[in-house]
Image (cartoon, rainbow, N blue to C red):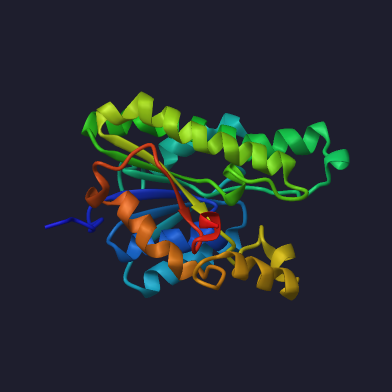
Length: 252
């Protein structure tokens, strides 16, 4: 029987305070995983833990500013303390400044590429040795429609998400022989903090929904099935893939 259970597994989810990361953490907990949430805002971390505990799950939080890469080694070690070594890593933390090309600064470029691309690699590399010891692990990155398409005011963000697609493939080449699968989810338009400017424009939202083949934009619960599948033993032979979860947006 195909195994979608995460009982006995431990997941680390960055960006766990809101949006995609928070929903994915809840989905993993419902499937049986113990979840370690990472984010900057402690009040939102507590709320996310309350949501998980309300469905019978187990969760704890590590408040941290992931943009400081010097903290990643300590963070990885601390993440293994509450429930044991990390089996599943979801790299959901991200930033999108939505700047016109002429307004991109060295600081905003570096901040975008650091959090969206560098941190997922360096955090994963800290966790991989323990996964190798057990011969099993899951790394799930968050890509984007902008991994393969260009959008206005998205040059730095698009560069980082294009990089995530290739990083996912390179991780697979490096680590999948050790039982660690590496995949990415490329969401369409979902209601999150990063897409708030889009959701404030009803006409734009309608146009985006019309671009999908299902006729609507995403809701956060649409993330649940694919997230659990990629984290579970059911996906043992799936690795190196960037899977668009976009209602058919990229099919047109």
